[in-house]
Image 1: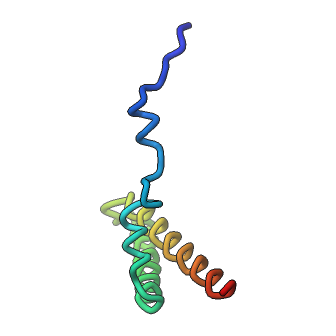
Image 2 (image 1 turned 135 degrees about the vertical axis):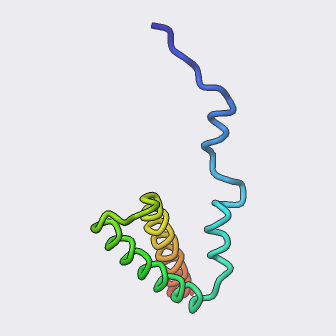
Length: 89
């Protein structure tokens, strides 16, 4: 069997952006702690509603569950980074 080589474009596509991440996460970095807390509460409420819709088979976009989970994780990660930075300072 012949081994296939990955094209240079495929390898370059997997590298992180030079600015340190994706645009959504960078947008979160510009928000204040209060704004992040408000958004986190809204996302958790949406996650709760999505779970109910999923349980009753009324969910229109199943991929939205994954999107909300990731957004929650990004906000929590940013909050942890800020807490560690303030504790170190």
